[in-house]
Length: 259
Length: 287
Image 1: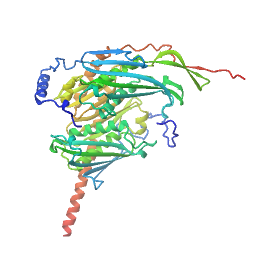
Image 2 (image 1 turned 60 degrees about the vertical axis):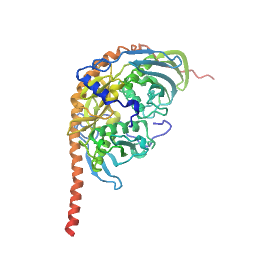
Image 3 (image 1 turned 90 degrees about the vertical axis):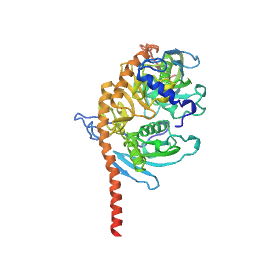
Image 4 (image 1 turned 30 degrees about the vertical axis):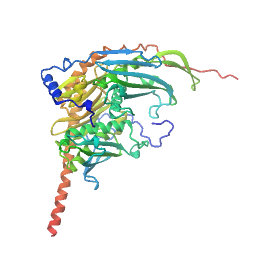
């Protein structure tokens, strides 16, 4: 951002973002998701944690709590306080980002919290706090949505009672077309970005933002496409959670068998 | 976020609002899709390059524009810079405290900024003076003076009104490197008037332009910014809660209609025909 710095790593704008065959810069079709991988329980200290890779995005989320809240006057008498911090490490992007929270990160922390709150039974834990930390280790477009995907798995891993998981993906407009799961270059040079989060099983949208210009019909198209991607991510989330318990079961059985 | 006592509403009041809404009536007798009365007064601060005072019912926002010449961002060397900042002043509400903008104020600023930027309301390419070196930097500062609900719409209205009111001096560039500021003032290149419309969901009912009491009990908030063509150029869902697809579609409909009404309160777009922001002059070399 600062003009006095000379960047040494540059990503040039490709001449076309979608080619004649409808392929995108990374070879995907407009309704194609990037490869996604979710791991559960990656941090031993946290009550719950998850690691998500979506394309080149690498994001880790951890949950601590419910625990006592300090200072006490911030406690809510009828429910837990969800504290959320979305943060990008300085080397996660081409040009070093200051480690201090930017205005963007403050806003994203807020909308991520608000995207997850509807899924949580916070009323089960009055006067307590649940801390959620999302660290972006490498950013490649759609970090807030991948962060939500990771965070919701981490919350489930922590055993926080939930109405549904929250799965999220960004859709957007690239060369006049509505596409699923924008990568960094499409986010930067495309015409618009629309992050969406949902509780898939309940059909409820919990995060909706957009920049760029859309006709009302395009918004409908974008939301339908987002839903399609979210359903796929939802399956990967559930698989990841199940895998952890299958693994746990196997370990227990092995131990038991030995004895 | 902890709510201060002013934001806590009695369950009786809440029940009353909800039962009224079921009959299609609001606390202040508005229709569900009705925006509060709007007044827009521009040129309220003469020392600012542009300014506007907006009243949306009892919510008051003032926006001021200051312009200066500075360096562009390295990724947009041929464009001017637009910076929107919002603050909730402690005099605006018993629940506001002094201090740097909190997440709510930052959200307002970023949503207002998104609408202006996405709709390309200000053509920043006209504000480059010496490409890569010197550009106009336009600061919009929005202050909420009285909070009676829906600060986003009041602030975005004040921002676009202040930008429409803004005049900057013409600049002469001599030999591509020296800048002379001329005493000829031209309007800022404003080419669209995006209008944000905030919709609150209370118990499955959608209402336009929530007042403070409605805001305090709303389950979900959705802000849609609409440009002159009726296209959506920014979206922000706020607070907790959730929406169905159907509700989003209905909200788009409500926003489109309300935006037209709200835009009537704004001054017209400036006539930018034959307006030049930068003039270039090559001086002959003297011995």
